[in-house]
Image 1 (cartoon, rainbow, N blue to C red):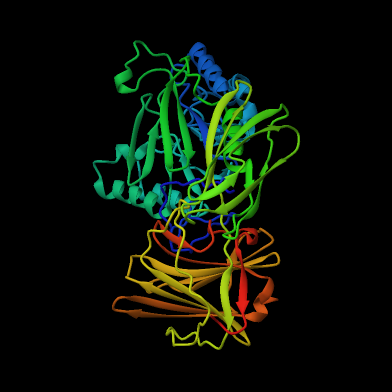
Image 2 (cartoon, rainbow, N blue to C red; image 1 turned 30 degrees about the vertical axis):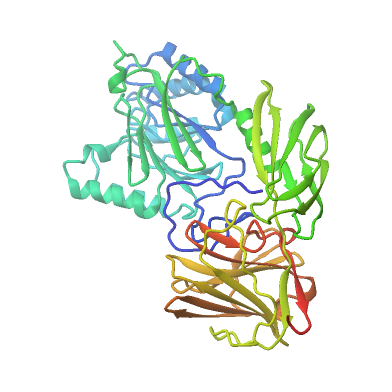
Length: 555
């Protein structure tokens, strides 16, 4: 299974229903970013200078270390600065030593006005820290845009142009976090045109969040889905804390995860709830939830289903598995597996008893991590159905003529959750001629972003073709589990709109497939988040597709 981190980014263009990973992305929606190990947790250090308080700073460092983030980000003002080079060098040595407890997590920073105030201090920043003054740094699958505002007094068109150039260097399908010191945009609200250019740039370039400091008080908002977070002081002398105004010793906690971003301000030295996962627990939680189970597909004809359980800890774990049968009969109905060292396989026997859909599922429970935290997850079993086809001459001209597709039509499609699809009535039909495989879709109604397509697996190669009444025909190919690439030849598509629906016909050259008798195949129709597919889930993996079964002369 692949895990998708969704951000608030808007896709620049439609890229079809598949992500770069091994499983289906929501049809018609480009996933903003794929991260290898689930939600990323960032600790954000605020200012230390302008009246440093070493005791409060050390308390903040201890609190962050206890929470074990995936990365620490500083918004600048780490030294008092505004002094000669030898004094500044000594200050840098002291502050870098204070950051030692956070080095195992990795540290990234942008310069503040106390850090860089002239050319000599800029050289000291780079030489003492190893961090760039400005640029784009990729960590954990995220583009961190270091935007230097240390010597800027106000927002200017030139400064916005510099940010535009930096954002242009990021991955447009990825996650981009701008890290800067001064929240100049909030100081430019009186110039609505200039502030509007800044906010418009963030939206146009797909920035996910902007982190800043400088003002020694917290301020957070979302604007058009972009998180704007100014972190208050993390080690500055404060008379009486004024929490309602965001003035207290603190650090930020930014989480980039499924469904968007979360941000919290945490008081340094606070007691954190036991329910909050450490970094190790977060990683194990992701691995068990998304990579522990590797289930073979169900077949409408029934038979054995292998469920492979993968371990991620050295210590043994007892995994309980209970079956939710739905309209199927699945045995055994429950099992316990001692998971230790190497993968274990649970074999189920399944057959359709009352109805095909919804598909049966497994409820799995186990404990994980050094504190034995409990995890329960539900996994719907995949379904691979043979694709009926017939040897016949058919023209891919966007019209379904009588006799072109004599094999049985595919009509009962599976929805996104493994239950019946909520798509309007749809028929898909397959025919194989002397030079090409042809698929026809007869679709009722017209939906927004309506499209239909087919995916074929042959050897280590998977091919995808899709189109719709208002969706441009596109083809992609993926080899050996690598990234997909455009597939521009070897196929054709024709779409015809009717008053009560639309028809699509696609042809794929047989020379692209190898032996048609040994290919796996799936067909689907989608519109936004709605989906109907023949085998489930919709994926690049041939093992989860049904075989193409050819009848010599149709029905």
